[in-house]
Image (cartoon, rainbow, N blue to C red):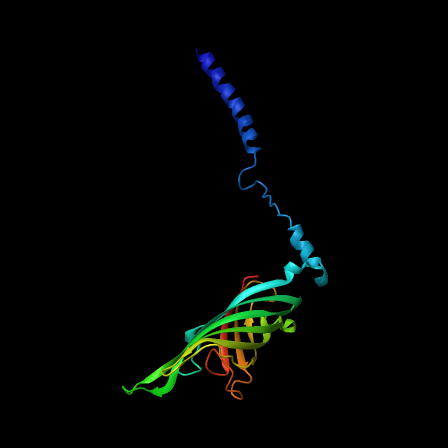
Length: 228
């Protein structure tokens, strides 16, 4: 009996170091090598970036977006002036940094009409207009390493009155003269989707009373977004 017990103990002592050595040969979690798999570059994207500008497909040069002049930004006409306009736009990048295009604008405004009624109150003039415009946007590529996203903007726009009503009359079908706006702004780099803000000066607003400004003054601030 004693011999059997001693034989068993000796066997266990002999096997234990071997088992420990086998266990230690397996890499522990902290010792296991970390394998990083790098995702391959999108071949289409890489090919597009290397493609000369003139060789790119026409659809890749198209852009479309939206401009809005909000009531809160229409303070240049005074506290009694209210306006709102929305303008979808579409263009084409004729160069990597230059976009030209067209836009359609719906504009609504309300302001005092200067007519005092029998109750001693001044009436308001309310107008709904539909307009069209052509524009050009030039990104300042030489400043992209300093302040990326700066651009110049110029456009010509014209409005037609859908409905203009004051205390005494209602007018439809009237057309304003063409207005010319110049300025600049800040937004996403050329060709990328995203927001932009533009400050424009209506060049012939003061000299020609038959022009229309959505802000009621020569200065116009717009928020815009390029979807493509």
